[in-house]
Length: 265
Image (cartoon, rainbow, N blue to C red; front, side, top):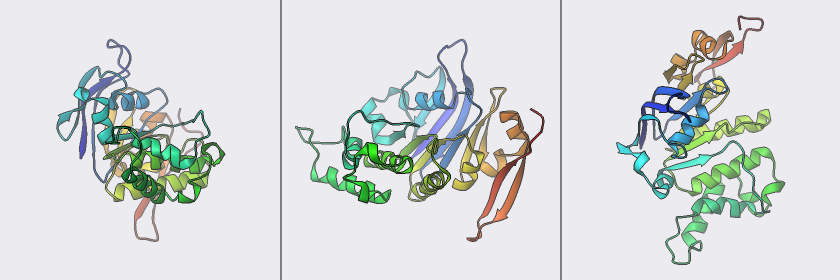
C-alpha cells in the first residue's frame, strides 16, 4: 500500500488555503511524522486525506486510485484514524469499544458480530497488550491504557494505514514512550503510519520520514536525519536547537533535539 499526496492545497477558503503544494508519501512498513507550528494546517491536511474536508487542489491516491472518489466504506477498508481525544458517552467495556472497529465489517444480515469479529477483537487487544482490561469500563482506565484501546479499535478495523493525531498528547513520559514504542512495532509489522506530533524526537524514535511545515507555509519532506536540522527547526518554530547523536545499545544510531535557551525567536 502506498499513499501519495501530490501538490495538495488544503483549507476552508479556496482563496486562502492554509497550505498548498503539499507533497509526501507513505507506504506499508513506514512511519511519516507531520511536524509544524500550531495553526500550520497539520490536522486540516489529515482531515482532507480522510475525506472529511474537500481538497482545494492536487491529488491524493492510494496505490494509484483517487481517494476523493471513494465512499466512506472504501476509505475505512484502507485507513483507520485515531483522534487526539476520544470520549464515550456510555460506560462501555473495553472489549465493546474495540468492537466498534468492526462496524461495517459484518457480513450477516443482522449486522451482529460474528465469531470472526470476536476473534479479530481479541487479537487486536492482545497485540496492544490490553487483554487484561477487556471487562473494564472504558472510563475507568488510565490515559496510556485508553490510547492503547484506541489503537486496538483501529487495528480491529483491519486497515492498511493508521493515521494518528498527536497520540501522546496529555500522556505522562512513561506512557508516551510506550505509545511511540508501539508505533515502531506496528510499522515493523507492516502497517503504514501517519502521525501528527509536536515532538521532533518522535520522528527519530520511530525512524520516520518527516513532512515539516515551516512558518512561511513551505514544506520539506524526507528522512528525519535530513529534515530535522538546526536550520529547518528554526524556520518552523523560531527556536535554536542542537542535535545530540549517540549509539543505542542495540547499535542503532539515534538523535535527539536539545533546545538552546535564550536564542533568536
